[in-house]
Image (cartoon, rainbow, N blue to C red):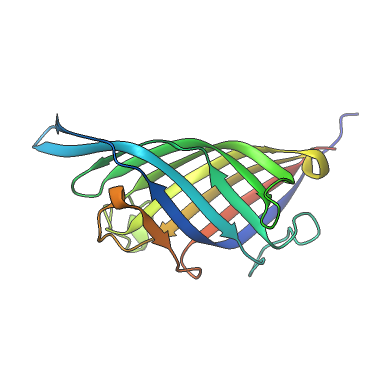
Length: 180
């Protein structure tokens, strides 16, 4: 008989920054207007804070984790609509060496998925995305499937880097799946 998987709700606030480097600036045509577009290097770094609310991962993941992405290109229009995709790692915040998860992260800036709940489809200062990752060493039997929501000050422009300081709004939430 095959082993049966188990699932655990992860719900953790995040706080950090998106660091950027200067890049290219060029026009892109769209269905209704030409948008000035920037293409530049970016890196996301966030502390993953103590579990809250419905989190069920206290026995699996410690407090004091760090989410970091590789430095890769971010595509951003002048109006703030943007897309970013990068490999990620979740590591111990102090040493940055103990690896818990690695995988892929994607973010869409100025895009709201909860329009039926009153969220604007193109809210400024709002990004949503997802993480798909696999565990390492102590978490090797786990996979991570989670959404990430980020609130930031849209001024100055994304290409100058942003701080993600609102730990009540910035959140990593989803599921850890344990394979036996």
